[in-house]
Image 1 (cartoon, rainbow, N blue to C red):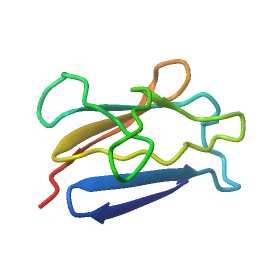
Image 2: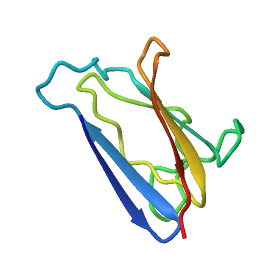
Image 3: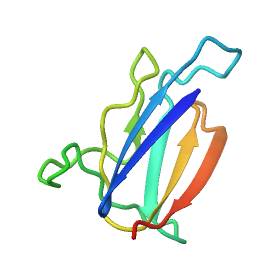
Length: 95
């Protein structure tokens, strides 16, 4: 699995891609975004200008790809398989 995280100012753009390895399928996997240090859901945007809101969690398609998503300010992100199994948690502080 390759995780590309591009930080620009106070936003993030996350893309996840599956490699040809024995990894759990990410089809239907979910990215949950929270206010940093909490379990309070954070607003997620489909565009870098924060004009188009999108769902939280962000759900991977049938090819295990996540759409572009943007978050403003510090956040916590969780990646879970479609069955809810936690794959990772990351605290991110944009400065």
